[in-house]
Amino acid sequence: MGKIAELSNGSRKVEVEGKVVQKEQPREVSTKFGRKKVCNAIIEDDSGSIMLVLWGDEIDNINEGDTVKIENGYVSEWKDTLQLSVGQYGKMTVL
Image 1 (cartoon, rainbow, N blue to C red):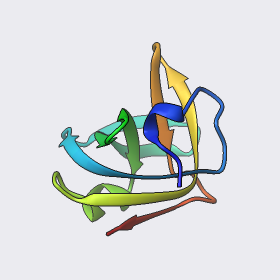
Image 2: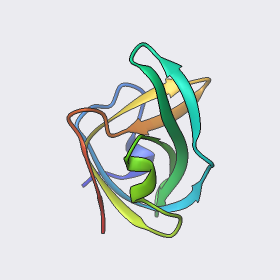
Image 3: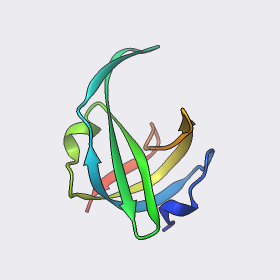
């Protein structure tokens, strides 16, 4: 299990646990697959915090205060901010 502070742009096969400390209101965006619901949340562990991008059903599955485990996630950068995503092949579990 890795630490959030160790994550960097381009990290793959990410496995971390963190507490959801903030969850924004969902919004709709246009993608190449049509209109999709997206929401940003911030998770943290004892080493730091990172933005977690939630899509579709993932949004309703977590709440502020939950501890989540991300398996096979990946990290990208958007507007100078690191973002952790579960992606198509990853898994997010509420502990």
